[in-house]
Amino acid sequence: MRDRTRYLYLAVIGAVLLGILVGFVWPEAGQALKPLGTGFVALIKMLIGPIIFCTIVLGVGSVSQAAKVGKVGGLALGYFLVMSTVALLIGLVVGNVIHPGEGLRLTDTARQAAEAEAAKGAESGTVDFLLGIIPDTLLSSLTSGSVLQALLVALLTGFALQAMRERGKPILRGVEHLQRLVFRILAMVMWVAPVGAFGAIAAVVGATGIEALKSLAIIMIAFYTTCVLFVGVVLGPLLWLVARINLWSLLRYLGREFLLILSTSSSETALPRLIAKMEHLGVSRTVAGITVPTGYSFNLDGTAIYLTMATLFIATATGSPLELGEQVALLLFMMIASKGAAGVTGAGLATLAGGLQAHRPELVDGVGLIVGIDRFMSEARALTNFAGNAVATVLVGTWTGDFDRERADEVLSGRAPFDESTLIDEDENEGGTTRDRPEPGEREMAPA
Image (cartoon, rainbow, N blue to C red; front, side, top):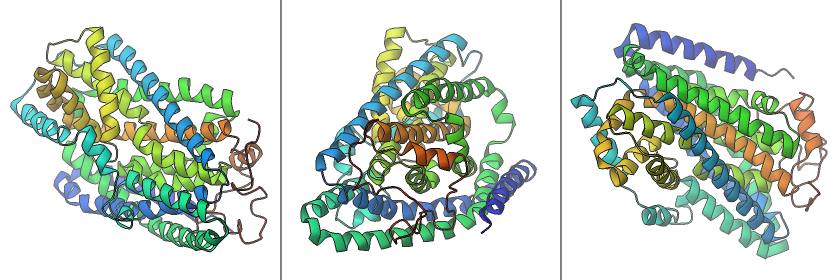
């Protein structure tokens, strides 16, 4: 059967180019198309909660030891902390070398924009973040749009089904059928992607224009370059050393997801597909179900680089350069604060403003200098975060013995293509032979 979805993604590319053209030639018309992009992202978001719930319940409920789930989560969080610190240090080095922000002036409009972002960044503290993980009701976690709420309820449900043993198996089968339904709906929604991409890109280009980018091109280029270096120089060798997987083969396998993120300016559009593709690649259901959603909240490599370079940019532009000790203290605070803002639109900008307000209030006005290009930088943040989460899932799977390297070789070589029509392997639990490998519950601690 021919893969008809190749035409879908060619249409997405065409829609992006058309959206750029419309945004440049007819800016007002481009801005008016914003609801198209917003609507498509909303369609994806409505499925994220159920997909995370089903994936984690099936993953946790089917393994025999609860300790194994805790080991996966602990390894993932430890890895996320180390990688975020490495990303922060790389951004710190690059920012101190190129000194971004020299020669810029702060306008009243920029100052007002900065005040708005600072207020937004101060809205949520650590306590509010922790309490916000608890949903109002068990079912509201699937409708609130909060990844962490869905993660919490899914883990509790999975552990409860573990404790029920044989009596829980019918419920697991029901959740499995629900997962197939939700992924089928997602596959249908993806056919609207060209319309969403067209509206999102036209609105961004129409609102920003080319003139607003010229004076800020240096930090944009430096930021994109730093993100590429982090992925290629840090994540690439690490992935090869631990899992013997070529980074560029993995990124090519996820090419359609990168295109979705780039065209919609939202990494959430790719979250459900990343879970499905990691399972197809050979990562166990448990590891993929826990690592991917957790990574979307805690593995923010691109955001760490952004906070570092943006802080140095603002300090230089406002004539108040930071000493090295001040840089490290401020950025460590921001890295921690960014975990609480994960999943919020414009979270990077709000965290930046909130961190400056808390440590160096005189620099907050400088946030206005970066507001105009933040949308373009947010795409690089999202792409880097996504690449980091994909690599993290493979690494955690390898460390816990839940990664099938032979299966990965088949998938990355093209011998076992991903089913774009359903986003899952239809025959996996129906006695078929689409995937000749054990279920996560049947595969225990294999040697790495």
